Image (cartoon, rainbow, N blue to C red; front, side, top):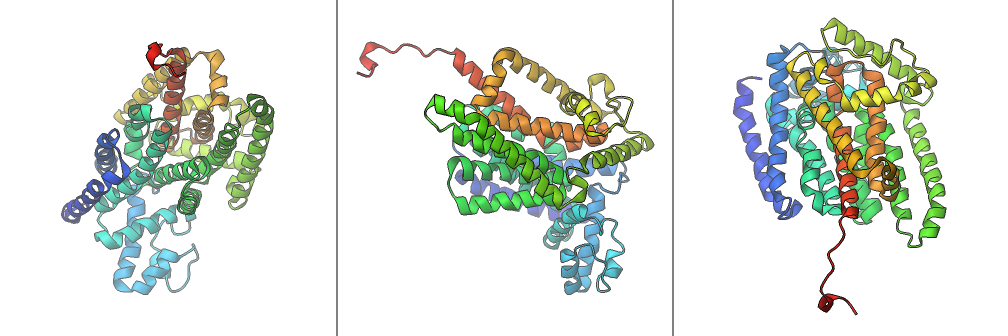
Length: 453
């Protein structure tokens, strides 16, 4: 970051805030208006903070997949546009094949042959055309685009539970690790925003059944974006979403007897469709097909363990073995979920970044125990079946926690990888607590004059 950032970034900040204040009346009401600008602001602060942290705390020399690596590769495309726009377009549309027309540029890019990283690089390069390829300006645009998806998801949940406007705002907008690691020039920023839009699309299309063409298009585009960058998020999201859709529509059956009779079939069909969705998604990427997923998890775990140890990172283990057979992974399921949701523990933090993450994990653990205590363990599963949205939130969060916990083995990476589950997990807990509390509150008896005849 340099002089160019100081000159161009304020211009884009002005544009973003002008658009935010102009659009706020259309996307808020008096109750949630107060969260809109602060939610956008913390995202922008997070985006700029990521750049400062990587440049001044990590010295700009973190692993080649970090924010500056994307920026540097995208600069090659930006320079190509300056020399020959046709070549620049070819680089933007390149599919990893090193053709003679683009060789001199593609050969200078570290991530040219990697489809997931190059997807991000394309976006950075495209935005660079409108920002003079200034890092900070691109970062704040990333933050604003990601915020749009998070706000869309927040509004979708708020419509279903308007009395939880404050709790949902905390879960989706103001969790420090989420607005920090989910705002800069990183994969996580794009996938988090797309996940928000996908959730909004599901509510709009399958729950509210409104705006089917527009919402359906946004849903498909969002899932494609996530699939192109982090396919395992789709593998965790689709089964939970499909079950949510089936259970939510079965809930509309008025007869309790019929609903109870139909429920096992709904669960079975939803499970089959979820499994089929995972199979079809995995077919397009050999590493994540169901017969390869354990091998991929082991390779990823070993690599991130090596990176953590070689660079002085915080490595964790889930036992003394690297058993990634289906039985071995199933045995590690509780440990993997625990490490994602509740670790690092306070005594495992060895630097300021880990300490902040440990505090966040500790508060999450306290909230979890508090909600379970208030709801009651015996009633917990009844609420999960009775309110499909809670099942969706917690099922996705737990499945995702297992996926990243079993394959990361490095707290430094885990802090960033786990942010997509946080809004869903916390929202699920808040909704669960609200419904349980509402059951315990008996309505006051109205005066006879107001009793309906």
